[in-house]
Length: 232
Image 1 (tube, helix red, strand yellow):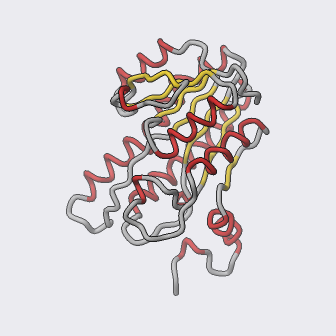
Image 2 (image 1 turned 30 degrees about the horizontal axis):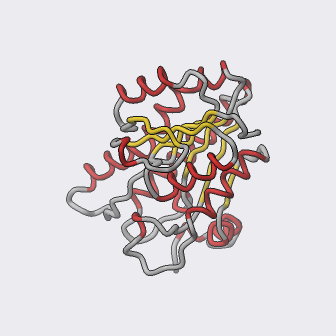
Image 3 (image 1 turned 45 degrees about the vertical axis):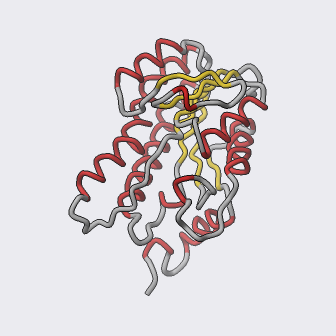
């Protein structure tokens, strides 16, 4: 789709990938709204801040009312608590991560789907992760939330095809953001990942594999012992 004059809402647009997506969408010629719990935290030039706690039904309803011309929804907001499945507080942690990483994209997509339909179909982008497909030590809960969001993305693509809504699932490995600041690993630049997502939107694609690690993991699905099964 052509992003020139598109109306885009990006959740979690105040930092990291969300901020990079906002910058890229502005550069592509879109009218961009950035959602955050604290709208004052959004300072990207050309981006209109909007108060949006993605776990708050009232905020979602207000965003729908404020953006009747929306053509692109980017569900980017996410959290990762890095809690082991055997941790004492795992149930509470899982509920928080699922609330932000799964139920929020579900609620936002359900709320904005009629708006996108009225405006010609538009697009939904769900920011996922290579951890949609595998887990590491202490990432099982985050991986579960992203795996659920991946399944949601595929379901949305099927259900919204008739209304001409492009649905994109974006997968990536580590990025250089606050969420991964404590990890001593190779990281992608958020601007590069954002550029690949914007390119996928413009080219009508359904999936983004933003880095070599992510591409290798997907290619490894057909291996005798796929990577998601863990090391022997």
